[in-house]
Length: 321
Ligand code: HEM
Ligand SMILES: *[C@@H]1O[C@H](CO)[C@@H](O)[C@H](O)[C@H]1NC(C)=O
Ligand SMILES: *[C@@H]1O[C@H](CO)[C@@H](O)[C@H](O)[C@H]1NC(C)=O
Ligand SMILES: *[C@@H]1O[C@H](CO)[C@@H](O)[C@H](O)[C@H]1NC(C)=O
Image (spheres, rainbow, N blue to C red):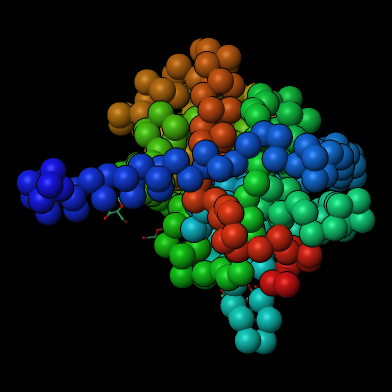
């Protein structure tokens, strides 16, 4: 009887509200202790794999952090970036931002092989990537966060979603803000997450137009980079992302104040616009940056996970079971 007195439009509204509430809470199905019974050594296996990979090549820590970002911004943190192309399938690895650029796939594969030895078919590739990003950050001196676990792996990947969702180094501030707000991130979170550029290296092709054509760049910084990045050729020549590329610190932000951001997109965060004050906060208060970075990474790692019976636990991260 009550029911008939409620207009059907209210029913629809309630249904929509419940639906979006559930969508927003989908990470509630993830938990820090997801593997505590099924694979108690999961976290220590991942951590030792990350430590030995970074010991072999320090840059790998940066590459693993970036891998997680590029997984999560493309249809959620579902391991889709790990799927290799085949003769009948094109995945995300050759997308604009990933081609000749993403690294660390072998490290994830090696860790996965060890996990399959200890607890076959249990730990997802998406979770390995999420934990490896956190462990890498910690090993290089950055903050920690408690990764929620229980993501499952996608059975597909999308090159067009990768092309449409991963920001490029020539983006201006409004394009960066809109790219991040599409995934629910504020301006402050955009700036905090961009602080990931405190570690790692970049190829000439990603900063060439900045060092030859931008005006908001320190001239001596530009000319020193021109030495390793010619107007043509040398596309894959590398330069550090900031002066301390193996230390997770706040040098990246200090450099922005000096017009020494490596990418056009980096310098856009401090170029007389609305995010200048956040860059200053992170420059003068490294502990605020650390806290904001960890919080934003946790939020990013919870983007659109597959849970329950969605997706699968891949046996081999590079291909669908
Ligand atoms: C804000 C928009 C962003 C843009 C436009 C951008 C763009 C880029 C580009 C062009 C490179 C160099 C790739 C190459 O040389 O092949 C790079 C490297 C890197 N990015 Fe970003 N990125 C962004 C945000 C992020 C975020 C949110 C993170 C992590 C939290 C991140 C972490 C890294 C790391 C660690 C590297 C170095 C990777 C390595 O040495 O292998 N980036 N980024
Ligand atoms: C990826 O890079 C390779 C090697 O430089 C190139 O041959 C190929 O065309 C690129 N793929 C795409 C989709 O851009
Ligand atoms: C920023 O870039 C977008 C996309 O390229 C462009 O449409 C827009 O006009 C640019 N905005 C500013 C303020 O330069
Ligand atoms: C710099 O800008 C000019 C004019 O738009 C363009 O022709 C040239 O290719 C650019 N150079 C680089 C290295 O991006």
